[in-house]
Every structure is written in structure tokens, then in C-alpha cells.
Image 1 (cartoon, helix red, strand yellow):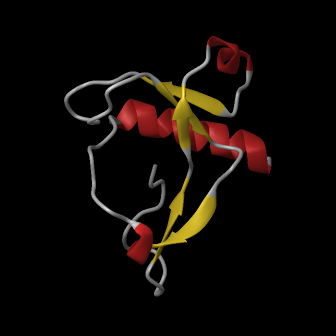
Image 2: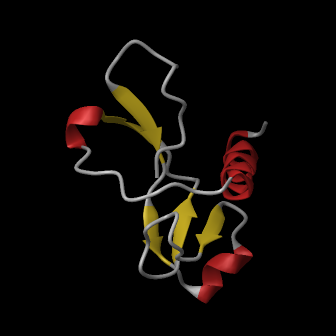
Length: 87
């Protein structure tokens, strides 16, 4: 899941957080954000964004964009990242 804005940085990098298949036990972890599939996000199953594992990734590694998240979902991800970094 790309979490950075395109206008930041001069390198061909984006900040990403990995998606993993949702497990109900993740609900107890504030750094996981559940994402349910819909037409906009292009997912075919419930996934979780693991906001504790953010990293930079080269644009060369991107294959294709599958969808977009709602602003509420992105706000939840930003909040979870802030929890992890103490912001």
C-alpha cells in the first residue's frame, strides 16, 4: 500500500506499508488497519495494512496499480503509523 504523496522526494521511491490477509486477531493490534474489498480498492479479500512495517520502495518494483483507498481509510493508516513512530 503506497502511503506517501507523489510530490515528496526527488528519488523514484514511495513509502509503502505491506498488505497481508486479514486475521481477526489483528484487530487487537493498533498498527493494523483492516481493509475490506470493494470496487475502488480492487481487493478480492479482506486485508490488513501493517503500519509497523513501513519502508521505501523503488518505483521499478511496482507492477500495476490495483485501486485506491477512501480518505477515511488513509486517515486510519496515517493514525496507525503515527502510533508506531510516537507522533
